[in-house]
Each structure stands twice: as structure tokens, then as C-alpha cells.
Image (cartoon, rainbow, N blue to C red; front, top):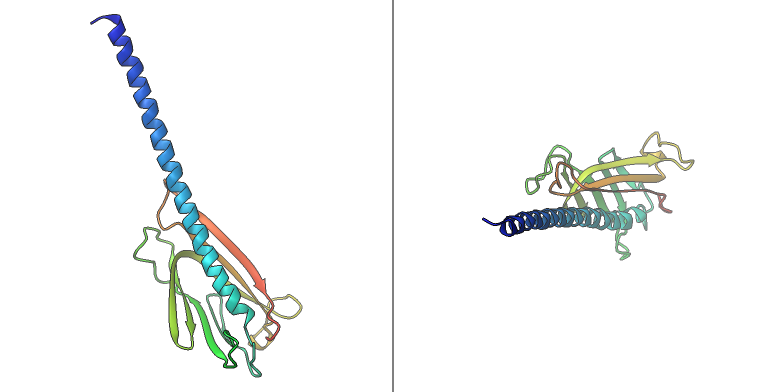
Length: 179
């Protein structure tokens, strides 16, 4: 074999390896971008619904507004759709259950129950914590002292990219006027 053919094969081999490495990097970056967008979309969707509901705590209600308050469950009343009828609302995370449709072992479902109708959010939520505050911004001692609700939430990608899951977090404190 002559030196020109050997050199051509060597250069061609290096070129092929470079193209394959570039293709792998592009595919990895694409997967990471897709999982990042999924996590961000999930946290944004859930945060919009939670924000809408929590601003309505106690709206058009003259009695007790918050019925149950724990770190993973909030039960309250308020007129969500401004139709003059007070709605019963429960937000709850079931941290004891992992979502079967994802490979992420840390995710769990979040439920929104309005007047007995349940909406399940399978958004790869891995953190859903509720905290309660009094009118001075201190942690509330009991249900009757609650004037504010803080939500901390993290959604992760349903599938790993490499060995990690992409995260998107959201945190907000609400002080509804009618509570």
C-alpha cells in the first residue's frame, strides 16, 4: 500500500471520529435542553395555578378560611371563580408515592381538589413544602393565626441527563387580603 492511501485513511478516520464526537455532544446538549424546558414548563404551570388559588383564600367568605395546614397539605375556602359561591380547595402532595411513568425516583404527584373534583399533577415534583405566617411575618402558631402562605416547589426532569436530573424551582409567599 502506498503512503498516500495510508495517510488518507488516517485523516479520514480522524475526521470520522471528530464528526461522531460532535454528534454525541449535540445530542447530549439537545437532551439537556429538552429536559430543562420540561422542568421549567412543569414548575411554571403548577405555580400559575397555585398562585391563582392562594390569592383567593377567604374571598367572599365570612367564616373560617383555612381548615387544615401542614407542610404538604393546605385546605381552605374561597370563591375561586367569583360566582358568589364559596369553593372548598385542597392542595396536597403525596410524597409517599413515586410517579410510575418517569425514571426519576424522587418525584411524586401533587393534587388539587376543588369541591371534591381532583386534578392530579404528574409534573415530576420533588419538593412541595408549605409554610404559614402570621400578620407580622413570623411562623404562625395555629390555624387562626395564619395570614400568609409560602410555597416552595421544585420540579425535576422526568429522565436523567447523564447521571443527574435537571431542576427548576419556585418559591413565593402569599398574603391574601381576605384571610
